[in-house]
Amino acid sequence: MKGKDVMAIKRAIVTGLSMTSLVFASGLAWAAVQYGPGVSDTEIKIGNAMPYSGPASAFGATGKSEAAYFNMINDQGGINGRKIKFISRDDSYSPPKTVEVVRKLVEQDQVLLLFSVLGTPPNTAIQSYLNDNKVPQLFAVTGADKWNDPKNHPWTMGWRPSYRLEARIYGRYILNNLPDAKIGVLYQNDDFGEDYLIGLREGLGDKATKMIVATQTYETTDPTVDSQIVALQASGANVLVTAAIPKTAAQAIRKVYDVGWRPTHFLTSVSISVGAVMQRAGPEKCIGIVTAGYLKEPTDPQWQDTPEYKEWLAWMKEYNTSGNIADSLTVYGYSLAQTMVAVLKASGDNLTRENVMKQATGIHNLTQPMLLPGITLSTSADDFAPIKKMQLEKFDGTTWRLFGEAISGAGH
Image: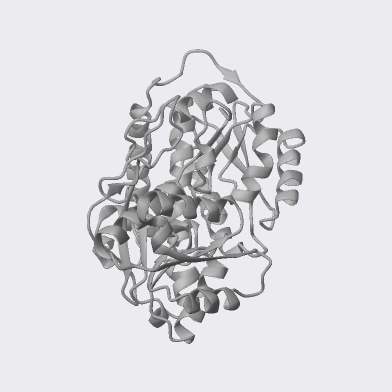
């Protein structure tokens, strides 16, 4: 891409980000200069824990993408003249290590906030510590319902749609389109997986007990899920719902195919990266899998002539050169970082932990380039769930194809 094209895209990004400040309820806080820990006239320290190694290492692409986005913002002059110092450390998706990493970030590095820590178990391990110390735990990379609990955990907020919302959408789709379904569920043995099972039952309503014929759990330390897949097949299930991290999801897809089982397969949206999951499982083994999305799929050709996609691609080629353009986790990190930048911009010169949290809980219909049409971010003091809609999509062997409309899974 020519230099002048890159500069034009950079100007568009800067303009777009400055406009986002208008969608925050409390407006701009320019009056008095106030700083919390990790902030100076020239710098804002942000902490992060990410599994760059271990069973969930595929998600490391998210942290690398966030770092790349902040590098671009810094090259453009930073946030109101302050550069972002993004301190991202490996926790291997191990809750005890997450606690160790986060304590160091808060107590030694003196970060302003924790941003985009990945995983339900790691975030659960640090939630009480961060809330007790009034440190923002912003935009956790997990859809557990517990992140939307302003009364008991006013310093914790997720970003993506909740797992229960997503599973309710699957349940309602099954009721309406697969009335003879016999459902088997494979889920991770923690809050992440259990939220999917709860949401699926909510979506199925009074038919849940009859329609769910088998469930199998797995631990992140399990070398394979072969035995679980065999057991689910033996149950007679003709529908499979899988709530698993990318490595395990790819294993499950391969095993389902290899044993000759052909259920209608619903797959959690956390494990739908074409580059990190579908290509590893074998794209031909993934045909027909259904999920629910909220971000534009980078391998979907319908977006590739749009300004938003071209903007993202230019950033990938200049700042995130190690990233895989077929990996939707790069889109995820890009979009998360955009939200963080919008909150910091809205905070103005009042960069205290309290004001940053106030801005994060006052977002109104924030649009972002790589969100699906019809999906925006909104929060309030009583609702910490930014994204409340998703759209069903099906894998065709090459990419995810959207169908239907963006829908809410609200309600039990």
